[in-house]
Amino acid sequence: MIANVIGVLFDGVAYGSLLFIIAVGLAVTLGLMNFVNLAHGVFAMVGGYVCVVLMTRAGVPFLATLPVAFVAAAIVGLVLERTLYQHLYRASPLDQVLFTIGVVYMSIAGATYVFGSSQQPVFLPSYLRGQVHVLGVDLGVYRLFLVAVVALLTYALHLLLERTRFGSQVRASVDNPVAAAGLGINVNRVFALTFALGSGLAGLGGGLGIDVLGLDPTFPLKYMVYFLLVVAVGGSGTIKGPLVAAVILGVFDVSGKYFVPQIGGFVIYALMVLLLIVFPAGLYGRRT
Amino acid sequence: MRELLAVDNVTAGYGAAVVLEDVTLSLAEGDSLALLGRNGVGKTTLLVTLMGLTRLHRGSLQFAGANLAALSTYARARAGIGWVPQERYMWPSLTIEEHLTSVARPGRWTLAKIYEIFPRLEERRGNFGNQLSGGEQQMLAIARALVVNPRLLLLDEPMEGLAPIIVQDLMKVIRGLVAEGGMAMVIVEQHAKLALSLTRNAIVLDRGRIVHRSPSEALLEDPQTLHRLVAVA
Image 1 (cartoon, one colour):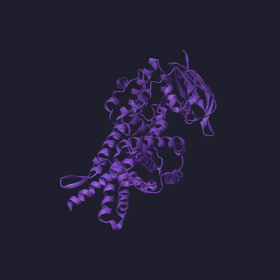
Image 2 (cartoon, chains in turn yellow, green):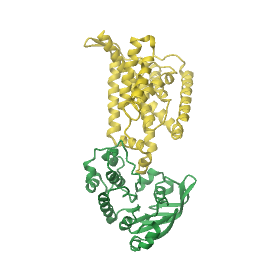
Image 3 (tube, rainbow over the protein chains, first blue to last red):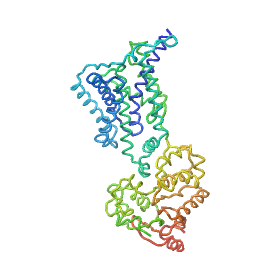
Image 4 (spheres, rainbow over the protein chains, first blue to last red):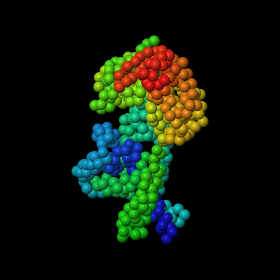
């Protein structure tokens, strides 16, 4: 029984790690740039399809597809940010919601047209398949891999935002863009690069998550609420908040679906309501 | 001295609202100018117009021979204008040191030199922008503008709301900057006598127009005119 619980908890952590790596970009665009981007999952889907196409049509190994997924999603994000999104930074939240919902439905229709409506396959290398036996518990190798990759990425992201000049410029641009520009920071460029980084991470998460989350054209809509949950519960504008929130939500969602499957998503949404009542600004609000 | 800044018949404001009308002034390299006037006459608007944060309705702005009006705000800072805004605009999620390193550009104003003139900032280098006293914020706002290594420093009400002892310290620093002569300076200040004592020339604005120009010393020695213009005895 205990081994079972530990196994479920571990699956929840792995699931939460995936949610985090996809949603962390949304925490940046929503929390730092104050842009309500409901289409964030589109970038994850782009990354997923890039991986699938490279694997199935070009025979590229799974791991080699992941950097390409990151770059492709980052480029798509950068192009959309420069051509479309930047015009809506000063628009009302409702306008941003309507616009990005439109992007979601366009992407669903586009992906269905190109790839069909079925789930896409992923071919994991043999060394990432199967289970390992750790302290009496069977843990999925791929889930261990996911947790390790996300831990590394989180640390790298932390270093980038907290220890580099670029990271300081991002935070300055968010805290007060007028002052940042007045002191010589190219705020538009900083925001565009930040948006691209967030999109790229979502794309990477989309590729990494095919085996766990699945991939079909409805992906951006299916997981939209989960990504928003991570940011709303964690607190936008930080890394730590969404990380903690994603792991909590991942563990409770997986546990709920495993132990009380008859109530479906009740557990995770009840938890969201509770956490938002207790922490209305999220678990970790931004410094003001 | 070579001309650094030329403001020619500038009419500017916020959106359709005009605040400045037909303002013309010039400033040479290393020169200093006090910008005086009662509340709401357009002093801050003139500074933020130089930073590209208002709508320029008419006129031209030249900086070091280039068309300033064609540059975006960040490019004006990079061209050599250091801005100390009236609101100070600290960044709450950045430490003191990050405030400086995030905007620093090559030049004689290095982190070490900043800490030399503001030792208090070095002591608190790890503190965040929202953890500073008013005086420390003002020191940091000036320091942050200096590490951009500007040719022109715009100081908007640098003494506002500060304790007399802090004002004295800042006066000493600003006087030192003026004396060095390597950088031109425009100071907007409610305390007219302070600003006049720091600068070479003065301009008084009223309802968006320049109503007086003279050497600062002459205005300082003419209390009646000064009182009439800015209601300060």
